[in-house]
Image 1 (tube, rainbow, N blue to C red):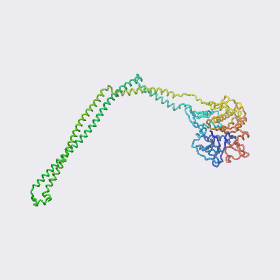
Image 2: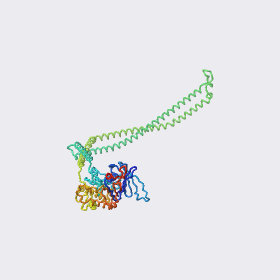
Image 3: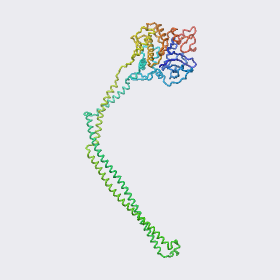
Image 4: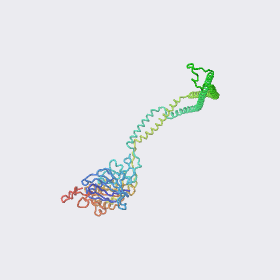
Length: 622
């Protein structure tokens, strides 16, 4: 699906808009020079993503913004942009024709770059084109404009149709895309200069590393001998590993026994310490009982002695004993009670002492058993430790080589083998990098198949309709992106035919692309396709068809044009009134007295109505 231009308008505060409404199939805007026709072409180019600033002239003073409306399916897009430049604002709404009640749908901003939007609407989204042989990129709005909008200078230019400068390669690619429908996504890219420089850097590094490795490898050594020597070292190391594994198994068993004996010894020593502690406590308690019995015996003897004493007054004061002690203690029964209590206490202590003796004997027996276990386990543990030392000594005596030397030899030989392998890898990498630094140049031949002949057939029929009935063959040269007419390159013709032939190719390319479902903008805008051919002073020797015939035939063909696609023609040459009515042509008269003067509405401050004496001056007014 393509776009269809709807109208172009220029606006300014307090000024009438300058508006041109386009027909959906073909539009002719005709008028003399300096009435704004080329300016319309520049405005369309500018609003479709061109960046060149529009030139200002007296009629455009006060106007500051432009608007281009175009249709795409059921949607109407508006592109608004300041005449001074800057970013474009893109809006969209459903086409008014689809609104049942006639009320326009609201406009909504399109959050997409204008160029990307045009590429998408033209069906070229995702297509890849060559920008140069080392770079690909998406098709851009510039490619669409280049093959759809032909300026007046471009019509007669002797330059190649692909243009000049950095964009010419992608113009060739986009031409092929419109022609054949095939993009360049499958084309293999050349390496960029940066990639070649990187390859050269990697090549130098690889060569330096190869030289270093070759210096490390002894001259009288090859990889096979190094592998054999490493195998012998591995065999010796395996023997060491086997011996160590056997010793490890024995040591593991011994150490398990040592651990078990150590645990048992620790338990026995704990029991010994516990029994010793309990025996000491019981012994100390027995001594205490013995001491208590002795103390009670001494007290009983004291009471007996007290009973034997006679009462005597106090030798100091002469008073009786009743005055110095409790009289109750002097009663005859008191000493007897004391002695009975002492006897009962002594008997209790003797009973406790008799009960202590079995416990003391038991702890003594437990201590003796624990002491014997400690002695036995200590002896067993020492014997196991001596066995462990003997195993370790025997292991060191059985190894007839130094393990450290074998490990060093293994490392050295492994490194040597790695150096041999890395040398092989670097040699292959160097060969590859040498190829990468010298890119092989191959011709790029795009497969356009029958498409070039199809476009040539459309262009030939078109040129025949325009009056060039003698033309017998037309085909497309895909490398030049141009026509070959009757065996001659288009650029070999004079300026007038160059312009007309280029117009025919551009229209034919659009029609072929749209009929074949290939990407294309869907619009062709031609600025003055007939002017160069009609100039009498032109030195074109190939102008065998009269100008009037070509003009009449061209306009008649345009009036019958029904697509596919849309054509907008901006032209100076006069058109027959009947054909003009059939075309519904927009006429610029350059005359205040009749019709439309030009693109911009007349303003008295710029150009007052002409008087009788100055009409000639206003004939030259733009």
